[in-house]
Amino acid sequence: MIPLVLQGAAGRMGQAVAQAASTNPEFAIKGLVDVAANLRPHETMWSGDLDSVVTRGDVVIDFSAPAGCRAAARACLARGAALVTGTTGLSAADERAVAEAAAAVVVVRAANFSLGLAALRHALAAALSAVPDWDIEIVERHHRAKVDSPSGTALALARDTAAARGRTAEPVLRFGREGRAGPRAAGEIGVHAVRGGTWVGDHAVLLAGEGEWLELRHVAQDRLAFAHGALAAARFAARRSAPGLYNIEDVLSEGSG
Image (cartoon, rainbow, N blue to C red):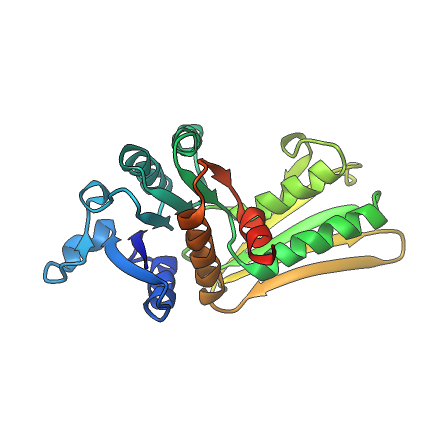
């Protein structure tokens, strides 16, 4: 069995991964790590200290916060464990920690582990090829408690669309509009975040032409959709011997090969 250590285990995604792993005989949950571990003093599997749990051969699945992701990357690097992380909103220092870990161990990183979202990205590439001059707007919806905005998935979709048009994302992204914003600039990619209720994850890419428009949309109804993708990534990481920074496309390619 593949030993798992779940970082951010008390969070929504941590709980979903634990639920999915508990019914899959391929995996054994070795440890549950969270800053809220002190609320569970009688549950021996829980810990607030990742370093005290991780050993060589483990796969750490991290759905926490930027500081937690950075700590997970450093722990995996120090102990020779693999890392699967879906934490978003990383700073430059966090990104460096992930890159340093990937130089020595297997790291699988994705803003979204949904197989349906991966399919949307493939469909988007085809659509952009067919209508290269249409306007692009990205709208994402998440629950009221989500901390970062826009979502990591929305930013990944924005980077996809910018790259398809031979541009880097940052100069052409427009985050919302207010007041007399003026006419829409050519080549602009609009990104809009909606927060409220209990939306798990809803991402729509709108392509608007003259007299017609197209919407590509993915809706996640349950976090188990992401959890099963994270377990597929953990399986990939456990089998992979070469260190490096991998993504969900690499995981899917191995599964279909």
